[in-house]
Image (cartoon, rainbow, N blue to C red; front, side, top):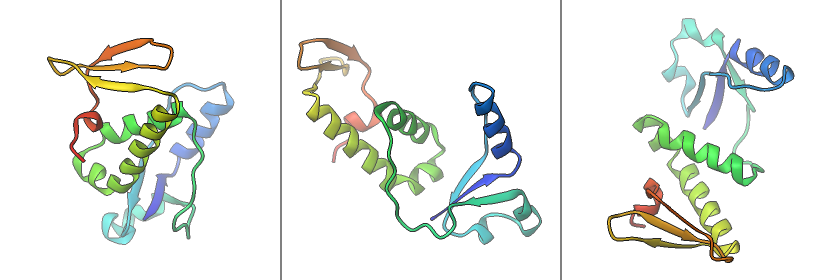
Length: 135
């Protein structure tokens, strides 16, 4: 799997970060076959990130993992299919972190999910897709 970012958007992203943040829309592509996915005339517009990577460990905090999960959930079906093994790893990390924190989940009548932490605080909300999927 190879990761690419559209040239120009990378510079905009770095400049935005230097100026104190904000959100920037960027184009990224994850593909196993760049040459098939991108016409030859457009290839010069893409920059490969981390060429030669096979599998590496990423370090992320809970907020970053949540943001990645949200991005994958919002992706179009072909992208979600491509990221399926990554998605399963994110879900496993989330479940592990919830277990470590003593979070209990319960599906309530009507389909809502109730989360209770070790101190007894409760949150009731709509379930996320991975919370109702059958393993």
